[in-house]
Length: 338
Image (cartoon, rainbow, N blue to C red):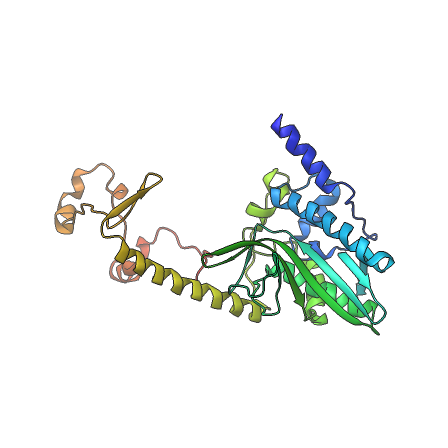
């Protein structure tokens, strides 16, 4: 019963939202993800399912209904943004478009799991926060999408002022601050044409995921076994400003965690158990092994290799001392490090 209820809710949420694309064109959202996902979506009628996706559809419909009532004929939903560059056609759909006498307004609607902030918002009025302080840490894909939309609006309306917004509904978070908010954030910068050209060229020539773990965590075709996935290829980042922005926030949060941990150490003079897990100053017994005695008695073990490992700090020294032939395997790996 409950599964059927959820399925009908999903159908109701996305009802009436069928997007069409010009032949041989590429969508803006597709441009920012693995190109194989776009190709497979044409061959297979499989769609990703998640509660936040359902919420996004409902949020879109609510906003569009309200905007239509406010702006009348000036309003358009799913405005086609078609742009040809270097022989390729880009075809985007703008959630909300409003055309005035001297300006055009584009709005991208988002209802994510949460909205990360870099400060506590001021001047929240009945759940609405207009981000004039620039404290919203945008999902990089959302931001790039909006910057592309802004550029295409500038191309389509060269004689009008262009304003582009992301309109969020979701849980806003900063430190211990958590509040469900409507957030309006104006995107005041368009993507550079050179960067857009690079994205389009890469889309047609490089059939790889656009970020690590895209296959495993975010691709329905991988999850359904239709695509085996492709290893992510590292490359030099082109958005240093965004990287520095997020790194700064990461380091700030690290500092906060250390401060909170120091407070906890002072507050917890013993232990506390929460949900079956004991935390605080927990007593445990440690044993120090006499390495010399272990080496003396190794021959008594059937499989001594099961009990020993080499200190990673000493590997190179050991190779130099005993020779290169002790290296069983040498391989290159990619790991995350900050």
